[in-house]
Picture 1 (cartoon, protein in one colour):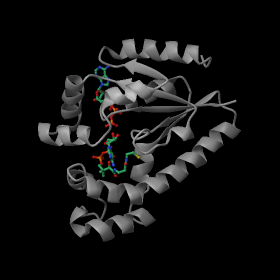
Picture 2 (tube, rainbow, N blue to C red; picture 1 turned 90 degrees about the vertical axis):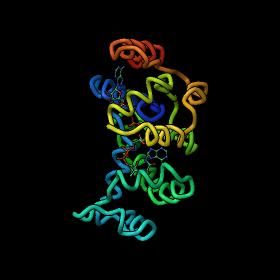
Picture 3 (cartoon, rainbow, N blue to C red; picture 1 turned 135 degrees about the vertical axis):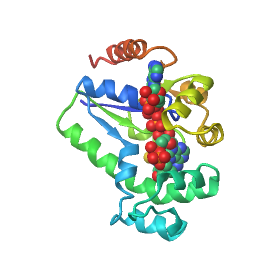
Picture 4 (cartoon, rainbow, N blue to C red; picture 1 turned 120 degrees about the vertical axis):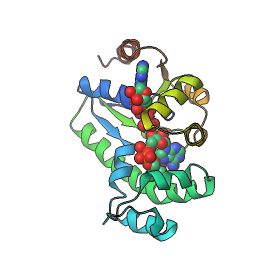
Length: 199
Ligand SMILES: CC(C)(COP(=O)(O)OP(=O)(O)OC[C@H]1O[C@@H](n2cnc3c(N)ncnc32)[C@H](O)[C@@H]1O)[C@@H](O)C(=O)NCCC(=O)NCCS
Ligand SMILES: Nc1ncnc2c1ncn2[C@@H]1O[C@H](COP(=O)(O)OP(=O)(O)OP(=O)(O)O)[C@@H](O)[C@H]1O
């Protein structure tokens, strides 16, 4: 039996950092952010729909979507965000299911679905256990601005476009507190996986 784990958190809370730990333990990770990037490449159906809805001003010179520009539109406007979600999410979901089934068939001990919007999009039925990577608000804002070299306003828009992280933590089967060092988070992850009989 493959245990299907839903890994989530809020923006810049440390999901990718924890996802890397899973990969290093040879537990496969299906990355919703990466799939959402692949399905909007030129030539894909979602690309045409996005250009149709948002106009050619969101394109770079090479014809690909300018993610920074599109982000500035959708993180500041809920209706536009819902529009983009309705184009991108169905494709991401289908691809995630396909990959999850592949790993189940291969009888891996566990597979991780790394889904930033696991709770917002009501996808908890896709997984058996939920794991939230938590940080406090100040650390989140600092890490986000540092990583993306973004201003405070843009960073706050992004944080506020998601369910508050403490609410997600309250819904989770397990929580990693990522305010400390990466080693501390790794130890918490090992304990959780031990409780779930995976390692
Ligand atoms: C708006 C886009 C172009 C910005 O791209 P960018 O490269 O700057 O960011 P990236 O895709 O790496 O996302 C970074 C983080 O932003 C957050 N985020 C992304 N999209 C959304 C959204 N629609 N609602 C809330 N938060 C979101 C997530 O925490 C994600 O991990 C891109 O995020 C996008 O296409 N979003 C819609 C698809 C989506 O919902 N992806 C997230 C989960 S599938
Ligand atoms: N424990 C930690 N100590 C110091 N820095 C950290 C720690 N965990 C993560 N970081 C850094 O914080 C930033 C955000 O982490 P990460 O990219 O893993 O978050 P994320 O939740 O995957 O973000 P997103 O939702 O944008 O994909 C990165 O620059 C990462 O290197």
